[in-house]
Amino acid sequence: MKKTILFCVLALTSPIVLANSNVGQEPVLSQSVVKSLTQQNKAQLRANKGNVEQFYQSFYAAHPDVSFVWLDQGKMTPRAEKALEMLRASHHKGLFPARYHVAAIDALLASDLTDANNQQTLDLLMTDAMLSYLRDISVGQPELIAIETKNWLLPRDPFDAVAALKLVLASDDMASEVALFEPNHTQYQQLVKSLGQLLDNTDFSAPETQVKVGGKLSLNDSGANVVALNNRLIELGFLAENHHDQKTFDAKTKAAVQAFQRAHLLEPDGVVGRRTQLELNKTNRDRVTQLMTNIERWRWMPKDLGQHYLVVDIPSFEYYVVKDGQETVRAKTIVGKAQRSTPVFMAPMNHIVFAPYWHVPRSMAVKDQLPKLKQDPERLARSKIRIYDKAGNEIDPTMVDWSQYNTSNFPYQLRQDPGNYNALGKVKFMFPNKHAIYLHDTPQKSLFGKTERTFSSGCIRIENPVELAEYFLKDQDWKVDQVKKAYDGDKERTVRLKEDMRFPVYTIYMTAAVNPDGQTVYRSDIYDRDPAMQKAIDKLIGNL
Image 1: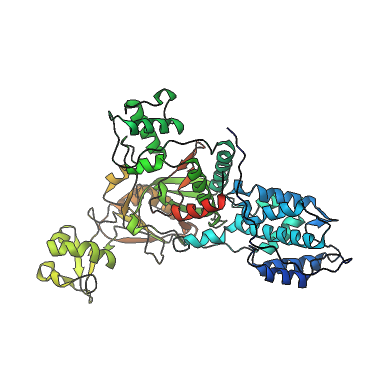
Image 2: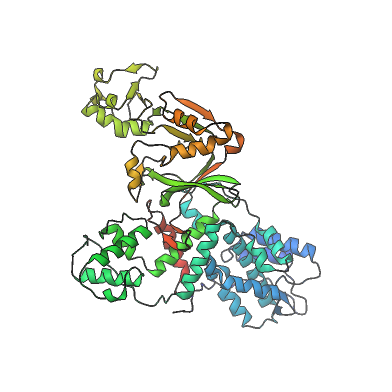
């Protein structure tokens, strides 16, 4: 059922202070007036006050005979009406009308617009709103960017809001011009569409069944929480209406649970544990904030990813390669555990190493391997891990008193030989970066059968290393059998990639996406990064 979406509007905390305007004089927002206004009201304005002043200065330099940007003879211009329409509908883009002075502007429109002070106020608010809107819709909202600054390490595009607004005002088609500043990524556009459909077609006042969190529900269980489970699955479209208020967990309930789990990248075991319970309890409002969170993240992505690039989508447990807009390779991944999360960053691919040694990072050596040495000095040797002192001399582990070492005084370096035991498998793909993250093979191939694959220490294990190596080397006169021979070899071999194959690798973190069938997919927030974003967004949305 359609429902009008009412977003709360934050009124200005104090009335905007206006410079005095002499009666009988044309109320032009001169440079001195704008400077005074922005200084006195900087707490209310969202755009950088320097941008506001710069815009008016350049606008009046180009249009010395024009009194206002957005008004003509005491009325909003057609461009102003179009702009205000966009601001009012900004929630459909994952933005918030309250941030763009919509309430204050509407109040001024209902007041006496022959009053010079009202005209100045309205023009200033519209300018500030549009400068902010263009920035927000293009590169993201500063308040939300600040929440994930430590986690989101991709390069950010520069943005000139003043230049953008001048282009928008010069265009005969304002909406089309504004759209040029939005991300052009397909996923962004599809998520915006999904958000609009959810906002327009959902009755947010309707009650939503909640499943009690705690314990587990499985086949043949019964009781009040099974009733809640069946009803919730019906509400979400995973179970037929004839299961309404049914007290038993039957085969159809299990099938519905498994379908729900698959749709949300949970282990499809048909058992309703804590993770599944929490996901079932996500309300329509929660989904709105989740969509807005991921729409915002797409704004943080570079607009131009390149003609050829590789993306590791961390929560989807997949990577894919795109060339000239077409996907060429896609496969499963295993990513970092929550306590050793895979970072979000970008670096260009550089070279491939077949039959790699594994140089165990110090953090892993002291946290993971030292306890094993204390229990059994020969254990690492059985996994072909050798121990070296600082001079590079190999150490016999049975001749060391390991009890004397801890995380602060461990003096050795560990290195695992190439081969079937090697933690990196038989090939690694290097894109040098400060995080020491790379793509690599793995001897633990059975883990790709799991749905939620957070088993690594940060690096990205891939399911199809031979296929990816063939892809990178096909233009370097490498035949398929040569790649396989190098993969099965026992001597480390480094292959530098041709310049045109040194394309960027992006690791990204998106917990909502639209699949090839056009269905919106909500993924598990494996690193618990959504709550802070969603909490901030929830406050801004107001009432739905």
